[in-house]
Length: 434
Image (cartoon, rainbow, N blue to C red; front, top):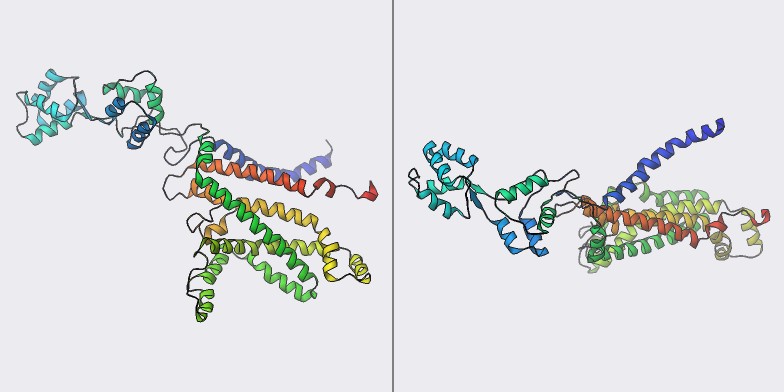
């Protein structure tokens, strides 16, 4: 390998490492997590085995044998060494020895049955309160008891006299396991949930309207400033670029101040008989208009800069020749400027489509996906599912599955854009050189 090649590889190494660290590895990990049921309830490390009210409810829904579920819910009373030691400590050695000789290893279905058995002993407590207290020392239950592994869990069932029929062991351990497992249910659940389709529809609306606004308004600003004097054009572009360089929080606060029921818009319209209201969140349509405008002005400002640079690169001789031929401003725009903007329009469309697909910061700050979930797009839906769930159980696996779908859609959208703009012909050598 030549030294120049090594030098080029050295310059490329930081970019390759950043690509791996910031794109390839996160995408691979997202794909891995999407095939798990990781959540705050399962954790991200190994799990344990525990029967709790939630797992009991899931077993009932799955149709497990009622007798087994009843045994799991019952509190049993078993005479064992631990209970006898506590009896000796609380009620004396004589009662403990008498209970051991009479009932050691026996299991009683409920406290009443054990209390009756204790009453038959000579050294029994005299008060009902003490009898119940002595019986409670032998209470055993599988509910809410955490076992570190499957064998300890099955031994716990056996110690309580709970017998399992054929096939019940695998089902019971599956419901009792609290850790994460490999699964494809995230994708089937995604296809079955109405909220998924609502988020997908919102995303299509969001990209379609915002991208159209960005491109059309960006081209309009670029063309309008092109025909202005240089100083005025520079000032105008600087003003329009402010939304992009402002911090997102400050930019959205300005919009909220503009649309609040006590904000600028309500104050201006109130003298004309229009009642004050929150113009951003009053209706779903108002929320969508606000979201498109908030994102649109930011996107259009970037488009304006790119399109303005592209227009300035057009040879002035072409424009002068068109003026000599009697072309109007509109004809110059249609036949000279717009055809020259094919490359920047393609780049802006691809870049902003991918950006709008994966970004939700302005929506999150402005409407938080509301009113209701009317402006919740796919990326915000994935974020709330995985990292900001009001229910408290963050579903990392399901959120990763939602994010993985976005990655696939982004790749597909890029391929479609390259075909739509005929990237090969745009990148081909000029015909005079062919």
